[in-house]
Length: 278
Image 1 (tube, rainbow, N blue to C red):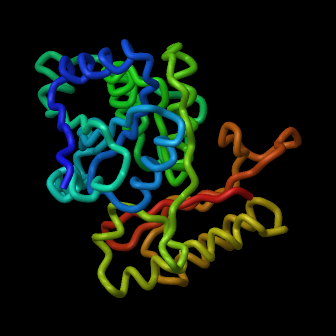
Image 2 (cartoon, rainbow, N blue to C red):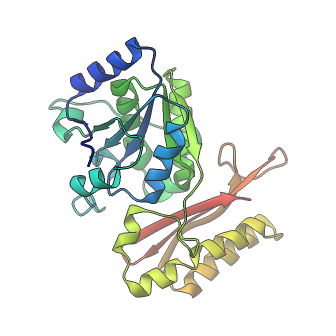
């Protein structure tokens, strides 16, 4: 079994990338919070076709979790993750500690506007500030040329693109298609929390999303129909079922040229999200 180099410090990460770039190599980053699944592996396979060296970061970021969310129970399984990376084009794993990323006295916050407003932030107002700060740090620490993010977190992808543009960070941001289970459920580290009954209910989410995406009804009526269908299927609560402008996630208007259907719903304490082009 090939031993993958695991880098723990920011200084060592920058040193490694500097050596690669001194040799004219193009570097790509796959940011993750670990608990790797086939969706993550597909990101690695996609970016490896466009770069010479691939970094996978593994870091459970505390600033994107609220006090009542699952930071303490979020799966941390580095040894299993390293095993899963075998056979994929990974040249380095960057796995810093919380103390490395947020040393004593850390005081910077980011207040994201634009595509960060609404949907996820209606229920998790802290979320994109935490995401933006950790992604900015990872991009600057790794000095990567390219970074890839899955479209399952579609709003997050738009927020990161806006942040990179606004801060003039010289990184290309790639979006990757959603990888799904056989019944259409989007792959997620949180799927492992579902019991057998919940997993059966969760398998209906994709079909409801598809009907929302293709509905010919007025927007508000299509959204209400999707919410009702989720509750009827057995979801406990629906955070949103929405049709939005795909470019900025604003309300659909006369200038809208492409639409996105997005859903966030809960089964017990487990929150599932999904989206697709409409």
